[in-house]
Image (cartoon, rainbow, N blue to C red):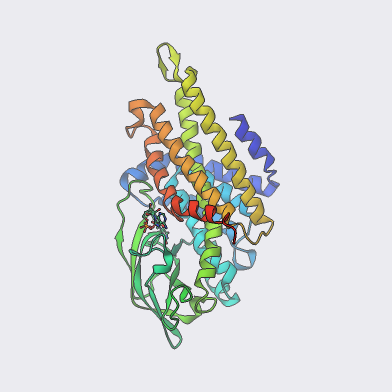
Length: 388
Ligand SMILES: Cc1cc2nc3c(=O)[nH]c(=O)nc-3n(C[C@H](O)[C@H](O)[C@H](O)COP(=O)(O)OP(=O)(O)OC[C@H]3O[C@@H](n4cnc5c(N)ncnc54)[C@H](O)[C@@H]3O)c2cc1C
């Protein structure tokens, strides 16, 4: 694992960042990882794990000080997501999503909105971001959730599906169409729905292949009155807000996928160095070493690329959408391949629940689907080379 330790050394963490990472690694080892299997088996919300995260005030890493947080470098946030996801994919995505729901508010919210809403997130609130609808997935512009202005309120009607933390969130960043704007894309707008708003309900919790401890909800809005004060930007600003939000959330989903890939790699290497067949450890067979070499190389390259994306963000780059897509695509494809090979190297035992690789493989699959499917990311990356 020396190559990965060297990569981490090159990150040159500051003293205060090292303290955060040490604390997160300790909690990941002592609390989050030991509880992950039971939460997955029972499809139970990982309360002890999120409590441990809250105790470390990790939401504060993405909230500015003026609103109760202690804003850190994006690179640190990504390292925290990866560390938590390595211990438990479900807890990892719940934590990552807290930032996805908050960041657009930080970038596009008014001073009044930030002062009113962000301290709740900094104190450990759950965030969610609601884009997908039953008939608007890869093409989000097909969404039909309607925002109708009514004096000091906005009436929301419609529904969203597959919303991570949708059933538990304190704040939901909701996208819908402004009723008074005819243009399909131009009508998209964003507002913040607070927990307990009348007319906002959970209609279904998905029974998923993996990430079983992370609630994925279908939610409904029935004449739901949201104060107009919760509208982000102006009516029709939604696409701009959405694209900016995705630029930040996609690398974090990549970091989450890398956490799963790293867990699978470590488990696989450990098992291959103990399991013996034909008088040798299975790591000694050359064919298996070739496979390990390919996966270790890809893991190292993916880590280095994600560092590159984080550095762009921390340097204030305006446009890094293609870089973010590359990170999302490659890290999630790697997570799937790594976990599949890890199961393979565990033989029949890998197919049984006694070993963590079984859960890791189930958790890995969705990383290729959410935050834009990998087909969509291939299109976005490929399209960027078409000369205009
Ligand atoms: C566990 C989980 C959590 C999620 N969390 C959230 C969340 O918090 N918030 C949220 O808003 N959404 C969330 N999603 C939704 C997720 O982002 C969508 O599932 C994803 O964008 C794909 O949409 P879809 O499922 O409707 O598939 P579809 O868009 O119907 O796609 C079906 C297939 O067709 C392919 N396809 C579609 N269009 C094209 C094209 N133009 N070219 C080539 N192939 C194409 C896709 O790649 C896919 O393979 C979550 C989903 C899951 C499963």
